[in-house]
View 1 (tube, one colour):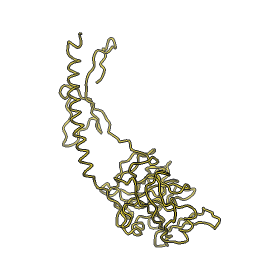
View 2 (cartoon, one colour; view 1 turned 60 degrees about the vertical axis):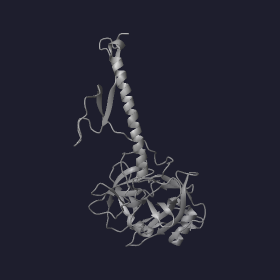
View 3 (spheres, one colour; view 1 turned 90 degrees about the horizontal axis):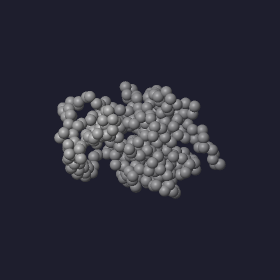
View 4 (cartoon, helix red, strand yellow; view 1 turned 45 degrees about the horizontal axis):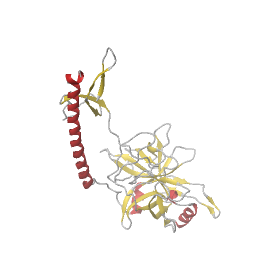
Length: 350
């Protein structure tokens, strides 16, 4: 309903019922669709620009069903980003994250000394966002330096026990661009020289864009921090992908983004994962990303979790939509009767 005023007195003369229809682009009619009528059952139509956007939760909110890109933690020292999901032959639904996010200093030291696979001995719970909101258990850590011909890797495998993911979507960003990326295919591959533009979602910087540099040149990423009583920890990763941001003012990744999945968009417009964020270079905007091929090989899989439509949920949604349509039809009938009553002479002159 809208208020109609007398042009001379500026007082309300009557009310008018109308239908407000929102479209992606006002003035354009999609192919194979008919234009809107000027009125339906005598009720005027007003067309406006606009689309419906669901208000989902951010990366640092508690999610009823976790998503890639959510902020996670285990020990109090660090937090990072929940990466990709996959089906493990022993543990079922699992997620991956950067090992240095999930381990304390002492565990990191043991992991670097062992070089290979490492399993923490106590307090394996992983949280989203933090204690006590547990999502699963850290069941395995894989750390290998690699060499001049093989990429290094440092990831943690989380067996998901609670709030399991239902789709391949990401949290709602707090900053930057709102994208509609749905990684439901599980496709992963090495980057190609003709497709080096990439996008990632991390819990700290959300969606950012970059370009893969020096694809064929070897490199080594080392940390020089973490001093313990028992000595120094040094994480070494050979042959990581090097990514620079395309935005002049925004970084591609920052602290808290470790573990974030990085994608290129294929010829069909679908995201293909090429790696996960490992870290960055100090005093530089360059980000180092672990190639996805070495992760697939270590996990013994060919692709990540494929999310298919939930048919039962779709049927429930259809029933709900039909119910809402019947209610809207009843409301439309009531509005039509109300409009006729308001516009009738007897209503205007009591």
